[in-house]
Image (cartoon, rainbow, N blue to C red; front, side, top):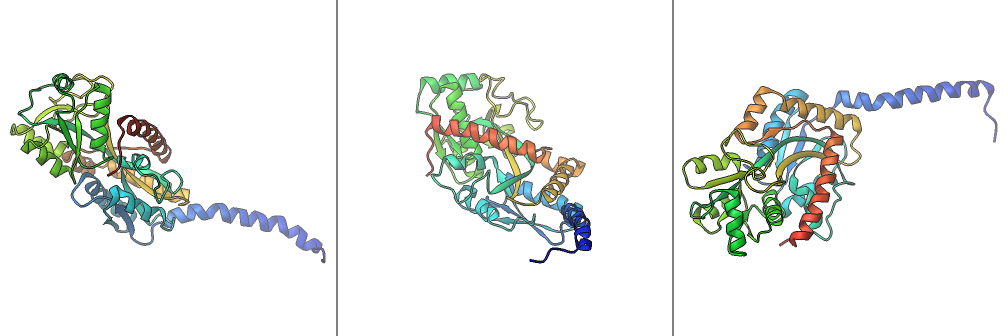
Length: 330
């Protein structure tokens, strides 16, 4: 093999330097040009719920900021697994995103094998919103406080039941966490959605449910349901007189639903950063904050790293909760 000429040898470091500079500039240039076509946001639940509403409100603001449409695509089935698998297997270019719910950190412990790994096949982008639920009982239930409900449930083990929107849902986790902390045995009954679970409580099919704040307020004010406590650590502006479950008789209780945006693994970091900045900025606008507040949602400002830590902590919490409660997928 012929040795390179002296002149070629002298030019090699310069060529390497230029290549290095170009290589370092490419990711930044990619982020600056992104997006050049519409973005698709996949939602694993049907239209009308908090996840779908978050995606649509957020998508409108993102489109304004990014200059490209954000199309919401509802892919229901298997508690979101179908949607999350679709995103996990998509091209990692930032044009296909998932709007995930807190239940995404419960699914790994309800199925022996998922077609994706939440920590390996998806990457955190941002947490647009979070929301507490409200612990509701049918007015016929002889409990006007959380402490009274606990006493009633302990005196009648297995005779009270609560409705949720499905196995592994945020409401289901809220109910089982209540059972464990309160040492009660309020039976779980799964329904297909929030409306069905609230109707079951209204009709007396079940005694208890964990309803969405916005959907429950009018029913509470009309005396059709009784509110005992808020699942989060702070009271809701929608129901300021209703205490948190923790302050109303079950110290340490905290169960909050959150909604996150994730992208396929290996999506370039500059694009993840760009999307995070846009989502956080959107949540800080007066228009979106007001729209979120009307439906009981609170904007969040997590960085991708903070979202990753939230996922890790929720996975650890739900692994223990599912095991202790003996939760099984239907």
